[in-house]
Length: 131
Image (cartoon, rainbow, N blue to C red; front, side, top):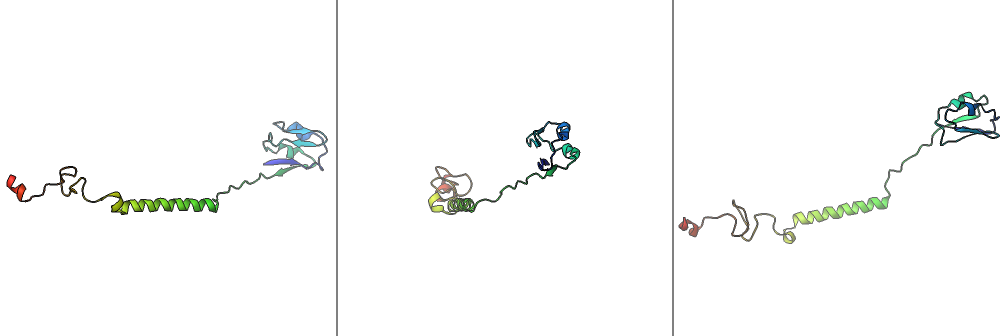
């Protein structure tokens, strides 16, 4: 809590100055509270006979958590563009090369992997004769 002095009620008696534990109150014609030094203990308000020191609630600081519409729109557009690019990459065999099958020139197929020289050795008439 913060405290403020109602200067129209303050008589300048100095009681508050004497009891302030952090020395936040100074006196000229009336008392003045240094808000930066005040700890909000309330001792000064309790000792003031005229009721000149009043409790002032702290200001409620509201954070603006909403995102401006222009930023939200831009983010949504960017996310949509990335999603479209991913879909094009994963669904378009023509531009990215065939994703199914094996690797290399023969197209792979069964066991034995892809690469040069073909994927699996399929039994054909020539292979049967060699074995």
